[in-house]
Image (cartoon, rainbow, N blue to C red):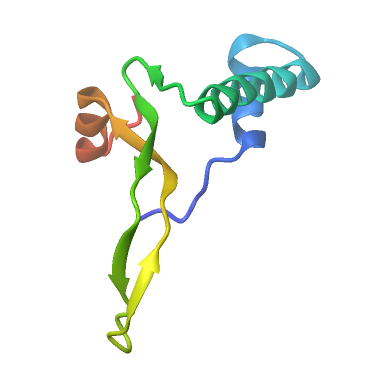
Length: 100
């Protein structure tokens, strides 16, 4: 497995090379897209990116969990969690290990 992590800087550099915007404009574009996605998720909307996947918010109810080390029961409070469901195309690309 590869230990490389894709960062905001990598995304803005890719926009700079492939679209032709300046580095500053590319960085602003990436930040704007990420801001729109996070705002939509924060307001409870799902974000669907075609051929990539769907980000959504799921409400989890309160439950009783166990400490695996001691076996003690611990109450787990209700919370909202972010989930990602990849598209079939993305699943196929990951299984195949291809870039494009």
